Amino acid sequence: MNKIAILSLLFIMLLPVSIMKAQNCDIMYFCVRYDPDTGEIDCSDRFTVGNITVVVLLATPVYFEKVFIQLDKFNPRVNDFEYYKDYEFDVEPDMDYIYFNDINFADLGMYRVFLLDPFKETITSALVEIVSE
Image (tube, rainbow, N blue to C red; front, top):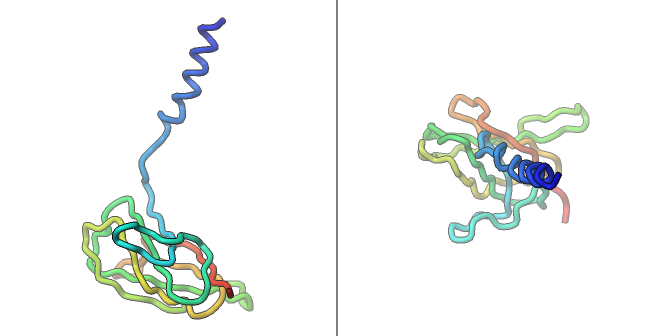
């Protein structure tokens, strides 16, 4: 009986290790700013009006030399997101961890933020909320 209990416990403990995988999808998140020495500072999905940093961690290198960060703002009157603004950035094709400083969110609201390739196809996206102080 003790052998079965021990084997069961060992199996349960090792099961999570056997199903853990490395990152296999693209992730976008936000922070107040990025510091080259310490990394992201104050990550969140809720900020006040002003500039924030968009951070992207890709499963594979970006491949392109030019990308766009596009902001779509939620319009409650039509219950949909509408184009707000975009920013163009030069990147290195082998980059898989990229931060985009000084993305300006001048108005309160909910935003859908996209990382787009040069053909304006979505690489990854995320939501961020801009609130008053």
